[in-house]
Image 1 (cartoon, rainbow, N blue to C red):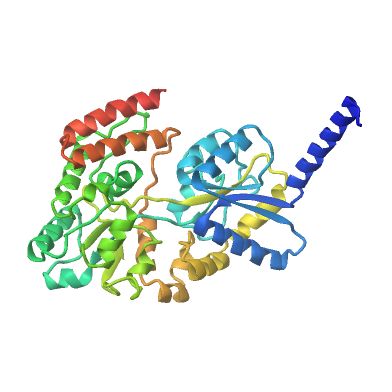
Image 2 (image 1 turned 90 degrees about the vertical axis):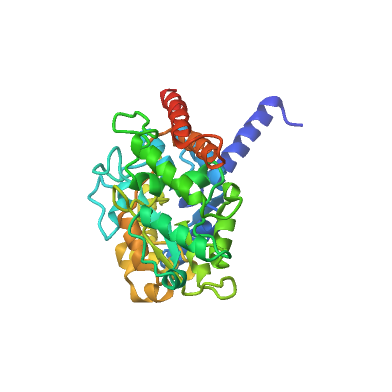
Length: 412
């Protein structure tokens, strides 16, 4: 039988070996599950074709779990990960806390990244150094049924007033088709649908001094327009999420969708799923007082400040974000690129006819506020938007109350 001291030494040795085994890889990447995980897995496989001796460990984690693990590891400076995948709403926290390496210490980022996607990677302002690179060019777009618009003599909507006119016209003349559809479920869904309209009307969530301004005159006008659109939406719109929106468009139950993400678009042209093949026009959201202001949902990847394999991490990141790899990921998985050249590539455009318009949406894209409290702010705003949507408050009251709560959240 081992003595207590011998047992302690054996346990310490075991833990040391376990830790060594966990970090034995030449590169450790913390990524997402789902399509993002597939994209990273495919990229790792191609990278290893030219780097066969590089041992890469790829973790594919659910959204919430990824965030939690990254925060714990980076806060404790454990050196567990070399490369980390980030939602753009996490960027300010990670960069502000010094958890990511400055990627421009050795020179400026080169290549044809779309400016709006790369700006999110910069800190503390859009002119600052980049601490990550954009790898997924997600942007909320706008879609309308060209066949129905032609049938009723309607033009491409130039602004949100024209959207209301078109929605009203189609609803009145076609009882089987609602004029418009959007996500009305409280929280992130309704906020995401509302923001392009809010920004286009001149609304500001938090001003340059850090004060909430959701209840400005412009903000109230935007919400009043949003509530007006409800008149021409399907019954029960207050609980609609992405599945219901996609079904309404694809089954010609709605003529306009004010929010369409790149991953939704291909199914609209798939005859096995859709009754509107080649009918939908996908474009950047209309403007109003301001120009088009689509919401960005850009995923980024950064090298950790405590990376144990910094050089290898930077090399892999360059490969991951290369135009060649982005083209392959777009064609094979439909992953939206962040490089301009891929959006104009003839092979890519032949497969995704809306890509030139998606590029325009990205060029006009707007990021959510760069504040650490965004998740709480979004939750508050989403609650009050839905209270207005179900008729429990008018636009002014809803945004006044939301603004007071957001102010308290920002001060905590």
